[in-house]
Amino acid sequence: MTRLIETPFAQMTDAQRKLHEKIASGPRGGVRGPFLAWLKSPAYLEKLEETGRYLRYDTLFEPRLSEFAILITARFWNSQYEWYAHEPLARKGGLSPEIIKAVQENRRPADMAADEEAVYEFCIALHKNHFVSDDVYQHAFEQFGERGLVELIGLIGHYTTVSMTLNAFELQVPEGVEPPLK
Image (cartoon, rainbow, N blue to C red; front, side, top):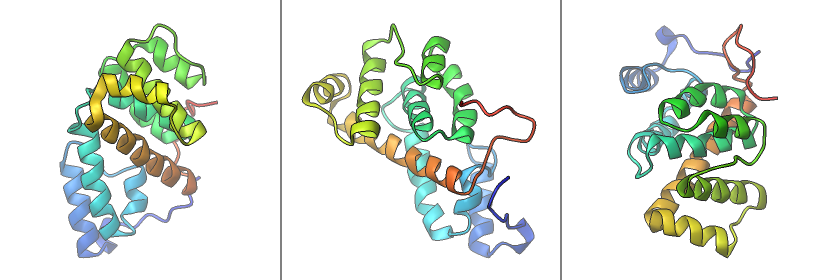
């Protein structure tokens, strides 16, 4: 059950309708999940949408790695909807089912490629310890450089905001869908 009172399109302000139409007609193909909450603050959503679009589609990370970082973040926050929305994208992006299953079960994946291991260790360190050790930093730096580190931090920071929004408003998976995280 969601805490969010959804605003019907006909009752939206001009700014809300404009953003709704922009998001619905873009690569996301619809307005759902955290966007339903963010529409309550159009100026905030306008900034988040641009940032989210960049992080999702335009970073130096291929989908296999960006979706991996998103799944790690969804798992950390136990964000059912976030996992539900991004697990298929991670599979489509080429992340192995074994890695996905391990993260879903809150285990360290085995047999990761060097770039996957760098993403995993960096994300886990920031989420759990709130900092990264010199070794973790160096491994990620060697894989992605400074731009990559900035964008990886941006990815997990943005999807932390997504997860917190989904959790606070209790935006869950669609009715009839089993929550993917235990």
